[in-house]
Length: 267
Image 1 (cartoon, rainbow, N blue to C red):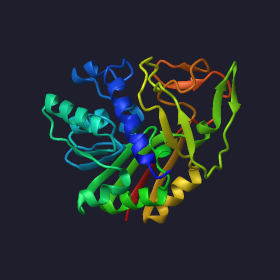
Image 2: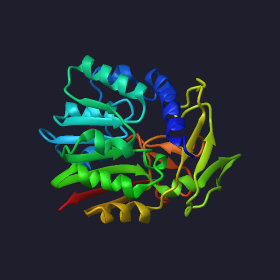
Image 3: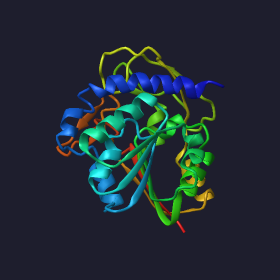
């Protein structure tokens, strides 16, 4: 457990190399002008022009740079040095003014040196990499100006109790789970067949109540919590269908929550 950060960092370095050439991320389309932001994020966060934004766990910066294209002054933070290097390269190619910093989330406060932002943003597949949400929420609160906004859209924690087995989705993991989950997978969620050199990752389950309580406990006021019966990618291949808006729904039990979003304000 003492080296979980390094194990996850090496895995994300490997993932970056796979993702950079994957159809899932489609960097060529992005460089040609296509935004990577979901309609949900854009609608719920609204106009960001002229505002400062801290993007936590930004991967290689597509969403960060999409927000920069929308007029935000963005600082992206990620644990992977390969992801940060790619983000900086894309920023230069696009002629944008985003800034990217390599840091583990729990060390980011020291790196930012008290800088305050109008918006803290993070989304999609981020919380499972964090063992301590109290420290995560404290970083968010301490990075916001008074009246600043925190926004995230994230996979619903109920999705992490399922596993695709044979021809059905099986309840394989507990919803309430304080133990680390160790996974060994040589491929990534993009569906590419490239094998990663560092396949082992450490991940954690967090309930919706734990997420909300951490944010409120750090001094944020909850503006809304929304839940949705769809997600942004095919997280259960063979068990999902995509609608004409690009949203993925379960073929059966399609009233289960698969995604949630939160907006909170530092008052």
